[in-house]
Image (cartoon, rainbow, N blue to C red; front, side, top):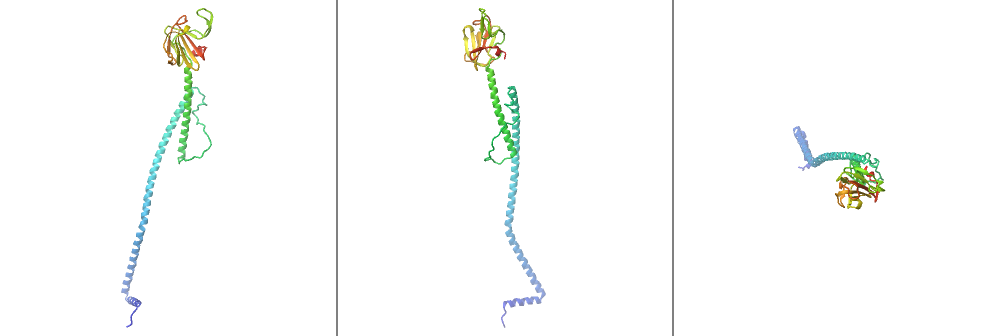
Length: 305
């Protein structure tokens, strides 16, 4: 009996199956189940390879959400800072308005030229354009506002300092220039210039003015200064001499007593002596002189100020 090849065995089995339909159906069902199992296995393998991609997407989504939250917080913080800065700028502008009002008032009180000190218009500025170096990003409108307010405040500060210096200089000059009556009470009894001498009647030059009053009437300094001489001085009797500056000197003569000492600082209106009749005098009065650069000038020019 001849031997069979393996192919012959397979074909003979197929032929036998086809001769019996029930057996063929069972074989077909088994084939379908095998195909489904293979597909399920392949799907599991594909799912295993797909899981890492889902994890990356989820991680990116989480990171983006965190960055969005951080950006929202940063935006809120920046808005709060800008609001606070705007409030500060508003306060600076209000303060500048008060400084402007004060500057205008001082200018009017000092009777200065409004063109010299102008607190109503922005300061004039200029210069060549220079490229900005090293400047960081900024909100343009807010930065411009800050620069404008800062420049205005600097200008007001310079003007107020100059105005203060000018007012102080004027006040100092006013305080050291003789002005006002040199006695607390009394009346003008003799004027400056040529007059008959009260003792011999001949014409003589009177280098001051006389104020008659009651004995002990207070004699007052007519300007700020330093006492440069006190004591008895010939026909002047008890004298007080005050040096004021700018070449001004005042003399108070014929006093009953002196209330100040040499070298003492005196303010305008302070009592320096008590009225009397010491020296060459016919009665109680004050002889008052004003000297400018060593020469006598008419005291009435200063008394009437």
